[in-house]
Length: 272
Length: 244
Image (cartoon, helix red, strand yellow):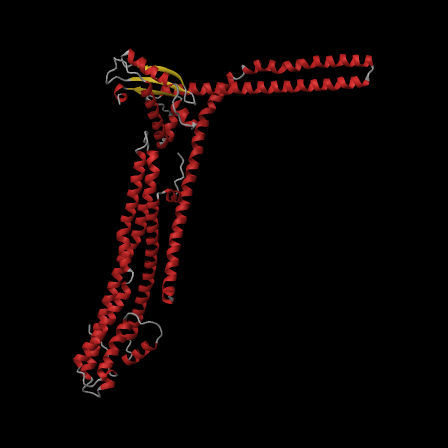
């Protein structure tokens, strides 16, 4: 027992130290890996911001129109105010004529109440107008973004939404994620597709599909006909009937790949 | 998508059998490291004591004096000391019996030295077979855990309509931890086994050489002793000369 203690205590201690340090190293290494990922993410956000900046400047000329429409709304309640003040004055005169101090006070209080309500309402209206205006500006910005995206898409020759950003980031993981969603989209089209009699193997139709962030289809158009009008129509209606596709929650990926994309349709891969 | 894939999450998420395999491998790794350190210290101490004894032995000191010195020193005998004490004790005991002839005396002391040498070798080789066992089996144990884990992850995949890489990847990486642990246990064990086996062989060779050298010295003494005073004084005039 003593022999064992004398000859084995140090080795046991060292062995445990080695394993503990390895475990610590692994833990730290994993933590470092996670941090690296966190560093990468902001870079992606930055790049989207860079894209958005020129759009805002483009959106600004469009923004001014809303204020004129909202300003009258905001001014109206202020026009009500003088009328109220006049009312008040007239009533105060009436009160003085009657010389009933108590009544006067009561009326005054009521007036004040009315005034407060009016003021609150004007404030609310002003806030609403402000919100309205902000929404309209945002809308304009979004429209500009989509327009720009469309132009970028037109520039790029590949079939599925590509732009400079995707080349820049060259993110394999994002590609894989997009691919799974595209597979889901194809599967849903298969489910909603009714095969026309004229469909033949080897046909291929390219559709341009536009989605909104919720995944709803807003527009379908024919980009490249298969040569058979019935088949083209059936593919188009399959997309329309599907109505809604699953899209990634990540808005950056959605904007880059799903806002509008080209979808290729071949009868043979739908036969399964 | 952003699953927790740290090593510890993988281990805690694994199935019971894989966890048992991982536990076995962890224990094997810890024990083999204990053995590695223990052998390392023991063989270092052995070599040091052998170097020290060799220096003393060939420094020209009288063998009888060396014998009493070694015997008086506390602690267990190791290496050369063990062989020397065993051989010399037997030689003295036999040469005290006047009837014994030199050949019988030498054979007796040689036998005693051989026994001591075997004991030493056995002591040096302790735990080394364990390292060999860990080194050769733990990759297989780890592989078993991995195969089991991958089997399960593919079986669960069969129930899914849409198979993506993301659904299999966590299970596979979880299972691969077992192989990693098996290799982590095996590599140091194999290295330790090879290194220590070679060292034990070298030290055993040195012990064998020493026992031969001592036999030569004792033979000279045994053949010269009966002509001189005989009996107890046999070893007093032993002169050491290296034969090589």
